[in-house]
Length: 604
Image (cartoon, rainbow, N blue to C red; front, side, top):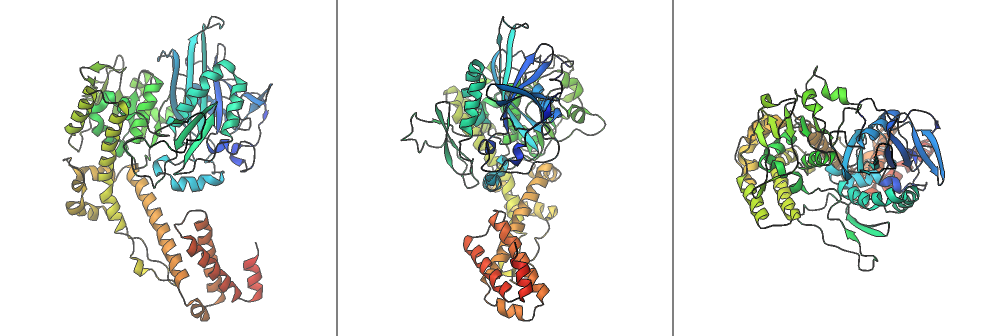
């Protein structure tokens, strides 16, 4: 646990670090490891220094002073340690976020997660499978170029051999992948063993991860680690939303039999939402509109799970706002998030320190949750309260907001969940029921937008080979709202309420902007692909070239090549047969040009 505001991370010393993991070639050491993890960190508590980064593995991972503290101990080879300065992500943030704060009182073993902003600009995805992988996964699960996730296993137990009387240490997996379930399972295997056997165990685990296949969408992978095989399915855009765990497959010849994870990313939604089941729909609206929300919880575990559950309830829509599953007063963005000189940012903030009640009193929505308690057959529900009832000391659990929901509450859902509890249904079935409800609610809201957006696409017959393709028509909000009378969410959702008002507020949110940009980008790529197909299917290219200048012909070659490169990089939805015809067209056109131009166009 932290030592208060006066504690500081390990002081700076050291020499320049090894080359960044961002520059590793596919065949370089730790290349496969980096498809899954950036690095593994060990954070300990030093009586004089406070939280200190004890170890980073592999040794060429790069961290900036902001990200951990000015410097750290780095394992460079078995049996050798050296102090190294790593310039890339926040060391101090990792140190502070890897320990529960002093108000949490976490004893024993605790798992939680955090999310931090990368310093020094965005890293370019280096791994050859990164771009293809991201194009195939659901948008809500794509890697983040500007943020890291930290998955923490914290242990605090009494130890008379330590001056403070307690053994306090965290093992942290740092990754760009939002695979919380997978990394929690991985930590459950390796952390207890590491705390007993220390570095040799960690080196062996990292070497095993470096043998794993890349996380390609749609594949079911067997991942061996520490004598156990984890079987996981990497989500794909082609997957249909499932309400039950996928069947075990492909393990008949595996010894030992694999541990099958039903999901790499989905939490136990029912357990996370237990205290707020009566307000799930209102919270869904707040997430949809990108409203600023503070979650004040008794521990980092409860805080981080609630924030991750809230941000996941919009799937398949991508959550476009910032969110921090666990946030402390030591974070580098503390001033940015707590300033009163401007409106609160669009952030979902998970905190455990009651000090934030005073600091964030001006935020419009604060969810205060306590330890889970049962009230009859249903977990005790937090009450809806006005912000004026928020007290800086001893604030009772509740959802403090002046927001009025646009949609009526789905009482049938609560009855089904209560009936499931009374019949002692498994938690995963109740989670599937809740997830299905939220999925259908989001789909009912998004489908009219998708239909209207599709109507803005030019007709395929208007795309001709030798003319610039027509433009996508602009999105007109009033036209869309008028279309809802005949093709609105009422066709797929039984819920009544002010859908028009909800759409109007949605248009002002970051999620509409994010959704529109993504869909417009996909449609523009489709338009380019259709235009390329039209050119390749044209039978009269020689006739077209007869009355064209060399400049126009060269321009056609360059445009075809540029689209071919993008298609090969999976950025355009083009069939292999079309790409083959495009290459032949380029060869035909180039051969028709004078020799000096042929030499220029054929040069690498």
